[in-house]
Image (cartoon, rainbow, N blue to C red; front, side, top):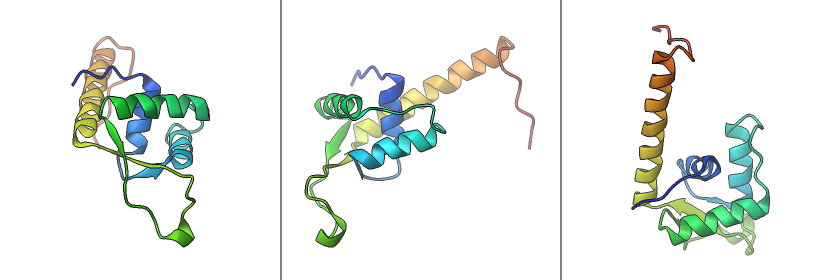
Length: 113
């Protein structure tokens, strides 16, 4: 599968990495995991979700939380196995970029723990 990820798409995949979430929870997770540096609009988020659904990277969940904990308007999403692989490949690509940045002295070397 050749899914070309934008940084925002990768953030959405990361948000779904630890389990299924509905749209608003994804928005909040992205904002939290970036310390507020990335704030997706709902329009941007749902365009990303639509693309990831078409590409088979995420899927809508069929089971729902108990009625008293749920809002019927919410749609829940999760990574597919292919989506997890896409996220892993992107993270590995970023690791290689960071290693190159360190080699070129753009970043300091990490000190051993």
